[in-house]
Each structure stands twice: as C-alpha cells, then as structure tokens.
Picture 1 (cartoon, one colour):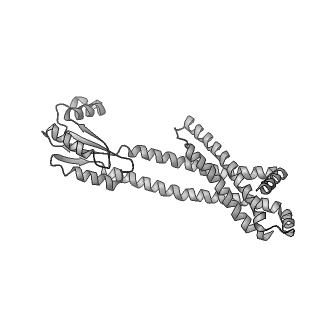
Picture 2: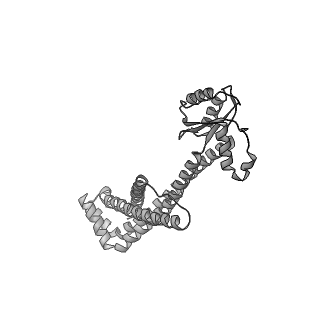
Length: 282
C-alpha cells in the first residue's frame, strides 16, 4: 500500500498537468451529474410539498348532531393512513369561503355551506389507491353526503412523481456511465504515458495486480478530488440560481458525502476498466 501510494505521488509530480487535467475532467463530468442531481432533488421536494396538500373532505348532511360528527372524526383519526383530522362546521366553512374569495364575500350569506370532516394523510400514504380506500371508508358513514379528494389531480400528481423518478434513474445512470468513460480515458492516458516503466516492471517480475494497484489508487484519489471540486461547483451554481433566478435547496450533508463517495467509486471503476483493458496492450 505504501509503495503504491508512493508510485501515485511520484506519477503526479512527474506529470502534474496530466494529473490536473484528469481531476478537472472528472470534476466537470461529475459537475454535470451534480447539476442533474440538484434538479432532481428540488423537483422531488417540490412534488413532496405539493403532495402534502392532498386531503379528503367528507361533507356532512345538514342537521347531523355535532357529537356524531366528533365520534366519527375520532374513529377516522385512528386509521393508519391518517395524519390529521379536522372538523369544519358550517360557520367555519362560510368564513373560509369569504376569506378565500374576498371579492365575492357579499354573496355568502347564511349557512348554506355544509359542515365537513377533513383528512390529511401521512407521508407515503398519498398514492391514488390509498386515498381512494380511505375515501370509500368515509362513504360508509350514513350521515356523509359526499366525499371529494380531487381523484384526477391525485392520479396526475402520482403519475408525475413516477415519471420523474424513472427519468431521474435513467438519466442518472447515463451521466454516471459518461463519467466512467471519461475517467477511463484519463487513466488510459496515464497508462500510455508510463508504458515504458510498466514494461520494465514486468521484466523484473511484477504481476499485473502489482502494476494495476497504483492506477486503482490513482483513479480513487482523482475521483475523490474531482467529486469534491464538482460539489463546490454545484454549490456555486445553486447559490447563483437562488440569488438571481429561483430559490433552490442544496444537498444535505448525507447527499454531499454520497456525491464525493460516488466520485471515488466512479474513479475506481473507470480506472479498473481502463487498466484491465489497456495493460494487455502495453
């Protein structure tokens, strides 16, 4: 390990421009991947915030006793899918309508709006099938006139989340593959630049594993450096976008660390692929 690390340090000192070019190339390939990840994270969080607005409203028949509504709300609150239950009286419904439609407030008179039981579902329980199941259970109460939850809107939101997730996975793998190819090309240049040295090492009995190990460490270190630089570039881009265009959320510490480790892994894979392919030609 010490000898391999020494070989990597020596190669970097002998060809600093090539090493710097490799790190920068890796950084920009991972920077493109990081920008895509930033878009994916913000899109996901936006969809999560929108999905928090998913609610079910069960409209209660007129003259239903308040005690009966309260008992039903207490029972519904125990559903495993339900996060919160609110009872909206006729007066509260009227006040909310006046507040939300202020320009037509003079139209609202009396208590013609029905009382309702409003449900907010737990995170992970807002897919169309679960929402419909809870809505159907509410319809079983004899004093419930109608249940609404925006079925078409919920289905479109869930479909959009699935499409975004699938597109994110496919494009993420594509960017990762491009990064591996670029890193492999930079390692290949390093292999070719040291071809005479490798030939001498083989003549004195060095095994392929011994020759390959320094290049694997080289790819790993360059992946870490490139990943760190890409993370800084992504942070700078996110800051500029937030300041001049639209507010964005940057990766948390867990995702940032995962990005650097991904750079290290991609560097290791790219190095292994390139060395395994090109050592046979040296």
